[in-house]
Length: 110
Image (cartoon, rainbow, N blue to C red; front, side, top):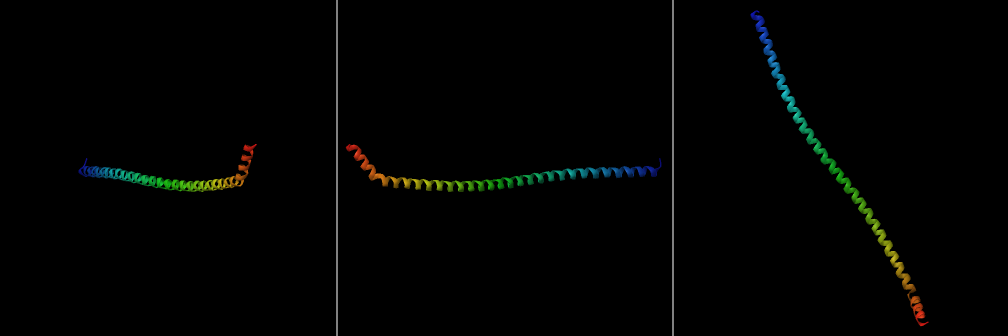
């Protein structure tokens, strides 16, 4: 083999060695980028999870508030209806009281 051929072969080997080092360096950079990307994805997932929980909490609070308001309205209606019925019963008792006393006295005197 001639010296020129040996020199060319050595140049090719040197170039291939540098290429291999560059590939290794790129592989390390890609691995680092994957780690960073994975960390960023995890961070975004956690942020989205927090937002979903926050939105669900707000929605649940809204539903609870609406249900509470509806229950309070129903309770007020029931209370008003009960007070109205009680008032009607008291009125009827007052209207019939004298009649009941007379009937009772008449029953006792018989």
